[in-house]
Image 1 (cartoon, rainbow, N blue to C red):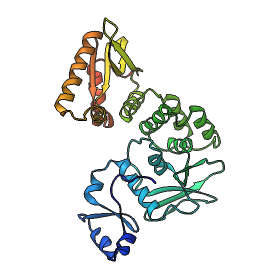
Image 2 (cartoon, helix red, strand yellow):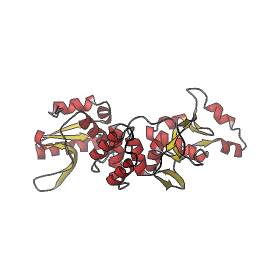
Image 3 (cartoon, rainbow, N blue to C red):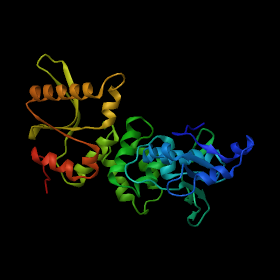
Image 4 (cartoon, rainbow, N blue to C red):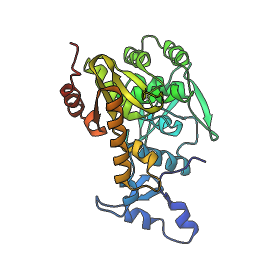
Length: 311
């Protein structure tokens, strides 16, 4: 069974315990309410929801839909809703409704919690924990036609790196609707996708570089000292400019933080940076998720080191 990133409270369980289902509904009324209504019959504590990322909130919505029976029937989980189940990272806003698709429908249908779209001939599905869902490849195609380059690179990089799909599979699925709006954006992202990217933040950073015409860097380059010992692997490198770029993501720190104070982790990262600069003679430039997402912070940091748009 799919796991929820936060506890879900079901009205039917209240009734089974002899409690009033209306108590949950009442506790979810108003902007400052204690509970948040996810879908009819399912709620979560507001504090739990507010601590979640966008993707986790959408996954919570999808799991609530399954627990309440909203995902039963002919409609198949699709688009962003399928992406969070497959574990594909997304950058940017996510829908406030569960996204589904159904064959034979002529147009979209919306309810307060679901949006159902038409699944065209050849639309590919798979089974995930007993439920029909758009395949990984189909999900990448559907999202690639409508989401940003940053989001598409994050999803594609992850899928290629983890062997969830091949580039050829995605191309084949895209070719089934050659005239579809958004195909050029999808194919452009697919061409630029790179399995060497190790995090959504690195994918977002590459999208900023591509869209702002920066010189193309080397990815995940190993740095060795004069004895041949590995000093580290850097996210981006421009050897011709003498610059190394590092996405300074909290995820990178989180990987190392088990049992270690944050100050120790940051100090170790700084020592690594100094050693890399000493070994390579290059300048290390760091930027955060906020810098890359808002673009200017990352561009300004790189411009100060001499990495500027080519045109």
